[in-house]
Amino acid sequence: MNNLTCFFVFCLLASLSHAIELDFCVGDPSLPRGPEGYACKDPASVTTDDFVYTGFRGERTITNVFGNNVTLAFSDAFPALNGLGISMARLDFGVGGVIPLHSHRTSEVLILAKGSIIAGFIDANNTAYYKRLQVNDVMVFPQAMLHFQINVGKTPAIAFVSLNGANPALQLTTPSLFAGNLPADIAEQITLLSHEEVMRMKRMFGTA
Image (cartoon, rainbow, N blue to C red):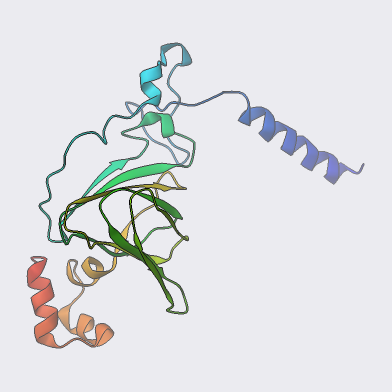
C-alpha cells in the first residue's frame, strides 16, 4: 500500500470516526451559526421534546397576494434537524391559493394532507410535469426545477414538504422580476410584457 493510498484510508477512517462520535447534534440556536450549522447542545440537557416540533399545529391565516401561508421548520426553529441536511415546511392554501413558480437549490418531497391541488414542475427542456393530487398523494420536485402548487378544490388545502438541505433557499420567479429593484424597462425586455403590464405587476408588489 503506497503512501497516497494510506493517506486516503486514514482520511476515510477519520471522517467515519467523527461521523459516529455523536448519535445526534441538537443545535443550540443561542450560539452563532456556522457553515455546518449550530454548535451541539450539551447531550446531558437534551430531552425528548428537542426531537418533537409542534409548530405545524393549528389553523393559519391567509393574508398574502398569493393566497398562501408557509410555516418553516428549519434548524433554527427545530434544532433537532441541525446537521442532518433536512428542512421542512407546512403549506396552507386558501381557496384558489397558489405557491407561485419558484425554485430551490435542493430537491423537495410534498405530501398532501388536506384538499386537492395541482402540483408540477418544469424541466430544462420546458416540459411540464403536473398532476392533480388528492389527500395522501406524494410528489417529488427535482433539485433546482421551477415548480408550483395550486389549490383547485373548493376548500382550503394543506401540504407538508421536506427538502434535502438545511438552507434550501427560495426564489420566487414573479417577485424576482417585479418586487425588487429591477428597472421596468429591463423587465419589459426580458419578459416581452408591455410597459403597462410591467407597471401593473410592480404596483401589485408596491415597487412602482
